[in-house]
Length: 154
Image 1 (tube, rainbow, N blue to C red):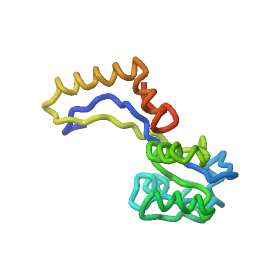
Image 2: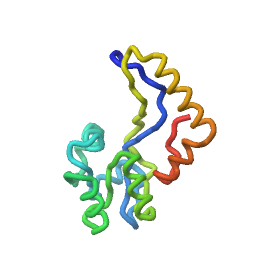
Image 3: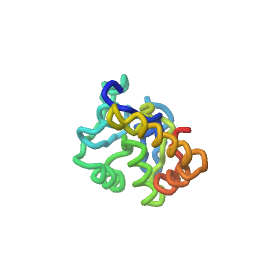
Image 4: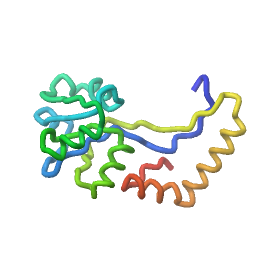
């Protein structure tokens, strides 16, 4: 914020929990006995490790890629995947929504567009364009197409 000119948030890319078929997750405490997977060195891993629930988890597996996490969910080796909402919803939509999406998540992660600090006019113009596609429903349509749900911040 100190070094860039920023738009208002346009997307909430929460860290969500996707579940394997037949796995129910209604509270964070339900995670304690489940096998969890996420990508190593990811924002999802960092958020899970910073959460008060982390020391109580019995199983948190780290993978090189989210594709490997998804393969292990498909194979039944893990029960839950912690993932950025944008990526998780995109992958799940491409798999006919095979995985469940828990109402339990690790909080908001708002996205903005950042430009050079001196580009105030360009930031304003970009914001107007973003506001227009949000207001006319185009952003919602794009979000639903790619992620299966509307995660646009209005």
